[in-house]
Length: 139
Image (cartoon, rainbow, N blue to C red):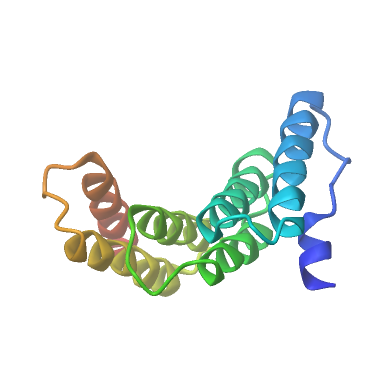
């Protein structure tokens, strides 16, 4: 039921392009969930894509957080770049909800994963996450 609720299209949007993109993301996610042979990484990517749609296109950061949490459930215990990106996106959603402590924690999780992956200090992903974290710690 919970997963079904997250995947229910919200057609109250004015822009048809938003709806087209949402339906494509939902279709991909449904295919991943229905296919027992689908990789967990693909399912993680689909949940993450749905979270991005919910946050950026529909302005629903609380719902997006739930999608990102589902994405993390698809992770192996091994750190990967996509996991760092999901934590960064969760931090952004917490920021939008004025939950700065939670945002700081999510950004720190992303940085920890980037450290584990030996991502250089000059990498754009690391720089973006560090900027975001400093923004919430100043607030």
